[in-house]
Length: 177
Image (cartoon, one colour):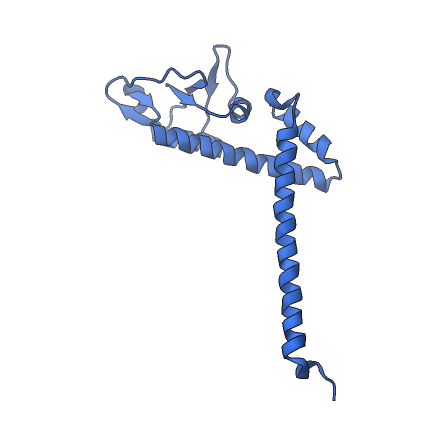
């Protein structure tokens, strides 16, 4: 059972190739053993008549597994509607972010530098698009660090404010007689 899928962003196209390797005829084998594979299979639509396909350049041909969730698929035409394509692209982005964050935190815990962690992630995931320019991931990690720093500053500000309120407005509780 084959179906076409449009993946819009180049980074996630490369990541998709890592997750679902292609065979010699450039068909990507989707497996329900992964969460993303289950998600993709769940969004497949059926039609009794052929569905016109987009002629977009960034399409992947997927081979779906024969499972109970797709038991009617062999006898119908398969397609993804526009909402399903958006959902799959969003889920692929989330999957990538979770994978990268986990990898990055494990690398930091082992004492590796940011540059080495990012390079290792790129090579281990075969993200050929980023091999010459890994600034995208560095910038992403920098933005994440700024967000965490802002949260920490806000937490410290709240603690200081609470202490100040106790000192300014409840001094009798802290006086020793």
